[in-house]
Length: 99
Image (cartoon, rainbow, N blue to C red; front, top):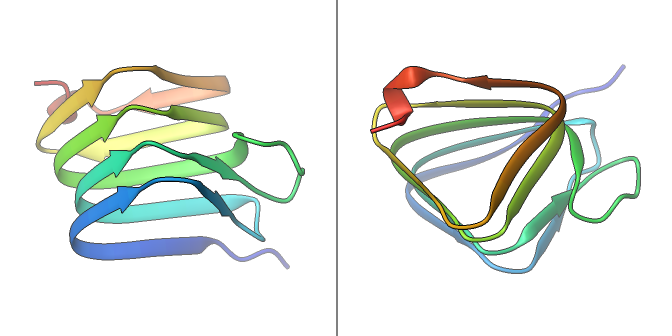
């Protein structure tokens, strides 16, 4: 059985460097999220995860690369993309974040 892993932050998640998840699904819940690093998981690929779910309520600022087989972004705030966001199989952006 495979469980999801999550990072939960009530205010600001300021990510630099690398986070390697042990499961195939990663969930990030934060009010504000600044990404200047990379994520990886069970496949051993640097800067790529299988399933990445982002729930950002205020501001998502991506200065790194968000790469996943399936990517889901949900939020009510601002998306500021300064680099790359892409999904190999499916991207599910919810319109409320694109302000």
